[in-house]
Length: 465
Ligand code: UD1
Ligand code: CA
Image (cartoon, rainbow, N blue to C red; front, side, top):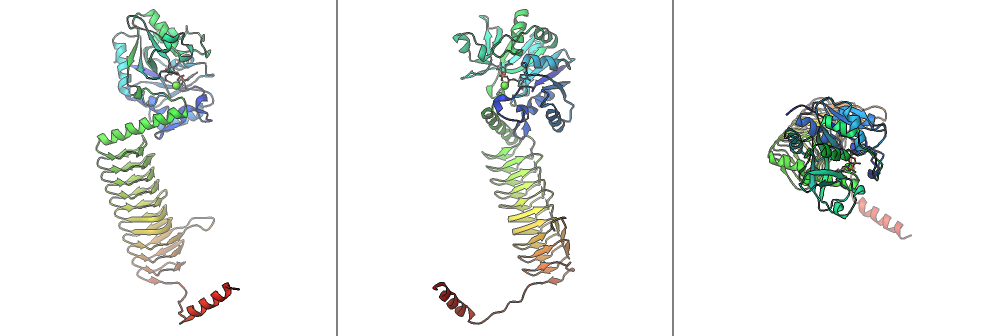
């Protein structure tokens, strides 16, 4: 296959999205809309990819491209939204290859196989090849008009359809093209904005090329699910549903059990034999290792879940790592920079932030552990709080190996508890506790015999006044 470049059109005015954010930057399955066609072009081997954007979206588009791709992706600016033909003309200024793919940034489900079919059609003599599909409801799309031989004659935009027969055509233009660059440049220099929208339509180039080269413009039928275009938020929803399904199937084929209703972003990596339950959201640069099990309703962002780790239902884990065979939840909140090491346990209503629980350490119920380091095998009782913040600065709490922190303990940081030390229930720890010592700091209990009866009588009398 000869070399080709790619132009991705992303400069439209996004009116139908009703948003301040440019349409192509709206996210689907964790990536901006425009990411998907650019990636498809790069995967197919495009030498140069140019994303055409508008002056308002330019900086944001460039920033996103920098975040999304290690490859360099060029940008070009279409000064005003004069139509897809005009935008293509702008993009072509950066194109050198003799062939070019022209894609719309709002078609996130494009398949590399379909693009490959288009470029090989050029090998078979076409000057222009584009994807089409048959839709039950073709309204809104450009219709593919063919002559009596079945050759493509033109693509007519929905608003410019001339009669009922054209309107009834169910074959629509999907909006991705492989074209001979020279033929495209020629056609685009001739198109006129003589249509309902007063725009320069790329689709008019199809008619011009078809007129100049018999059977030179060809439409290849494809699966509508791969060619879906996003113009408004209802379509954004649908595209995301299709993408989540595609991503889940990709993992399933590699040996991951993904239950119905899990939402796995395109950015996530999962090893075979992991299991992802319903209602789980895996986002960002999350990695899940083999045999890990993520139970119902967990939301995991930018985190690493190691082999055999278990997240019980409804945990929120962000920017953290969960070690092999560790067990977290239900209802745990693991905030950024937490490290839950091998075989450690974090139970219900425990919040960690920038805290390490070393191997086998446990905090099973109701605790706040911020800016801490909990030694191997240490036990943190229910209701324990690492008082890490004095209103100005954060301070750290260090708990030694095998230490036992009784329930309802406050550790006022900075503070350290030595290896094997014991902190009695209800203690407020303000000084370091030496290795193997017992720290106890609480008021002594007094029992007053029979006093409860007297007290009750007094209170009852008071309530009747
Ligand atoms: C377009 C096609 C239509 C096809 C449909 C498939 C044209 C004229 N029509 O219609 O035949 O059935 O896609 O999804 O091409 N853009 C620019 N600059 C502009 C205008 C648009 O860069 O001046 C970009 C948009 O950002 C978008 C893409 O081009 O990514 C397509 O534009 P859009 O307005 O969505 O075209 P459709 O009406 O969907
Ligand atoms: Ca569109």
